View 1 (cartoon, rainbow over the protein chains, first blue to last red):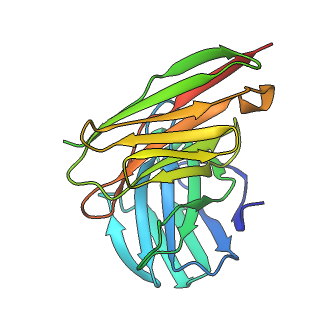
View 2: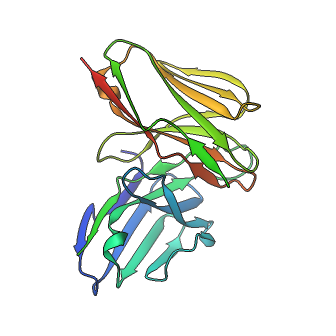
View 3: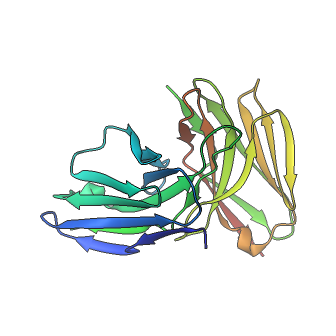
Amino acid sequence: ETGVTQTPRHLVMGMTNKKSLKCEQHLGHNAMYWYKQSAKKPLELMFVYNFKEQTENNSVPSRFSPECPNSSHLFLHLHTLQPEDSALYLCASSREGEGAAGELFFGEGSRLTVL
Amino acid sequence: GQNIDQPTEMTATEGAIVQINCTYQTSGFNGLFWYQQHAGEAPTFLSYNVLDGLEEKGRFSSFLSRSKGYSYLLLKELQMKDSASYLCAVKDSNYQLIWGAGTKLIIKP
């Protein structure tokens, strides 16, 4: 139990569907992240929220839409995805600021398959 | 460009010692992290180095040489449960994490 909870754990969707991934952290952290993990590739940072403000959007296609309603919750809205978007999507949180190493605490991930 | 290199896969024997290397070329340096990821699970934080030298934490140790752009993770008294992927990541001058592709460690009895 890492203190970061993701749902659903598995998701299968067609290219025309709309779905959302949810993440919740119970650690009092001030930063939250979405990462994409594909086999044998480095983790790809998608979005970062610091104190609920989006600070990073690493050229992610608009079919991925993040939402951070408060510092404990993070969503990733998905629509008209492509088969190459199939991957493990990891949510993480960290404490950022003076004196903090900023280690990430990850959720268990949402395994997404796009048909 | 920024780059993290680590071996793709390593094999070791239960009870032995293994060293997983990580070399990096980044724009600036603000710390190096090691994470462990068991198959089908989330990565979990193992260690953090920001100054040169060795950090020891039980059976695991992590070493850093900033001048050489080099780190290693040392695992002693290997156990079967240590079979996992080990991810190296560096924070660059903008405090962005640059990740390696991970090293899959296979432990044999």
